[in-house]
Image 1 (tube, rainbow, N blue to C red):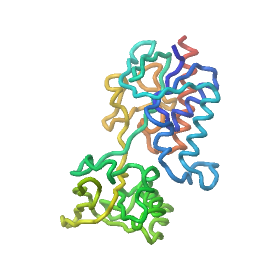
Image 2: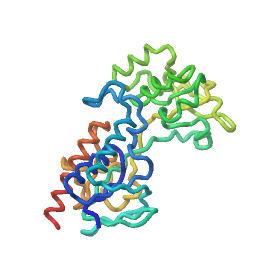
Image 3: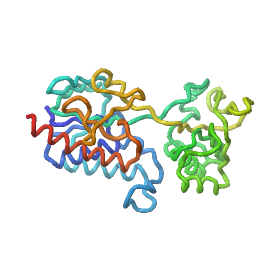
Image 4: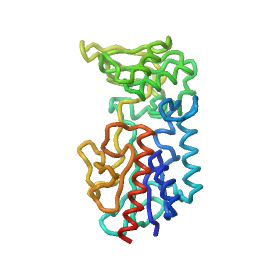
Length: 304
């Protein structure tokens, strides 16, 4: 029996693990893949307070993981397949076994949304990617496209210019949503070309991506853009399927929480990108994780 089980190893989960371990609570963090979450796929972290110039997501999250382990947080790699949060004793079922705890902190994050167009699913791994920092090197001196117009999309486009011969940004509107400083960097980069008012209708290719069929949303006209890769940055889908019927989830799939990161179930807390919130950044995730751990510690003190 653990005091706290943390589901998810992004910045929120790692910070919760650090705080819970430091409080001498028997803590287990369950992560499906490599710890770090979305932050581990981010190139530069220019807006994390105090981070040295040139800091990357993998660097930062690796240090977070080391800190959590230093304070006694245990790690298990596995996929959470179900939970029973109804009783005082919480049960978390994974593909590597069942675990029990007094409190649970859900930091399962969110994954990149898919377009759902023809060719996308078939060509994942063949030029369709959701992580520029992971796959950019495969496109040395080749033309690629980024789909999206927010901070993540434009930052990915800027990063891709280090490798690709040309980077096309496909955006359905006539203005980007990214912050002005990020936009300015993109507009100043000669390798980046914005394709306005357009959506991807189809991704063409047999074994690898060869071209995008684009549709202009204003004129209805179709065009073809030859590229060797396409990177999707069109928003996030919260990882809450395993929680259905266990905690309250809003229509968008996110978990509503109080200021203390409490869900509607006693002893169950949530933090980071999986929660209903305005801003999803590393800086907000670590604050959420710290709050959730302290709130969980208080819950255990009051109830056990």
